[in-house]
Length: 136
Length: 134
Image 1 (cartoon, one colour):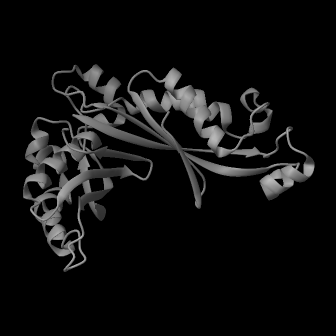
Image 2 (cartoon, helix red, strand yellow; image 1 turned 120 degrees about the vertical axis):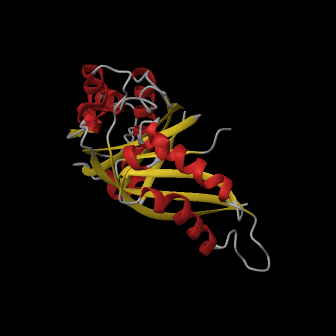
Image 3 (cartoon, rainbow over the protein chains, first blue to last red; image 1 turned 180 degrees about the horizontal axis):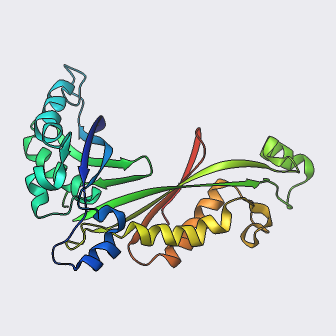
């Protein structure tokens, strides 16, 4: 088994707000991330797939196909977007880095015919990242 | 759905690697320039990984403010700009980064109750890092 990781970057804005909380609770729990006008990050995404090396190609996965799926399913939808307003999953989910990792997994996993998805890692800043390995 | 969250913290400290159980020659042989009697320093980078289910109310594994507060109080205040050899936990234990990593893991395991502590990873320099997961 070999693990292969492809990295990509995207920039997006978001804010944290739960309509079930009072304004005071939102402020206390989410702090400056609660500013309704949003703020942004340069996110780094790492997609790790796993598989056996194909003896004919020497590849775990055709990188071009992986890149295409990452673009069509994730980057085109998230890059230069306001996550709360423009990405349907975040109409009901707070766009934390945790939920971003889960959402990216759920977008990629069914479309990845070429290899098995192992891990989604999302860096919000160099000092903060989240890993999601699927539901199991 | 379990998610792992990792946060990085920085602190600077000095240490000297020296064991009283070894002769001066053995210490020099074992620790090389890290045995310099006056000590030397590093900018340590500590990665703390916690895990848990994402709270549907907040979208979070744990509130980063809680984690920052705990690591700030228990780790950064304790170690930043200190000589590690002068601290009680390193009077009988050599302050290698292996031992520091275990020490930080044990402190956080005890003090941080909001999410499950998975792992502590420390970079002593860009070229070497240490991980402890209990």
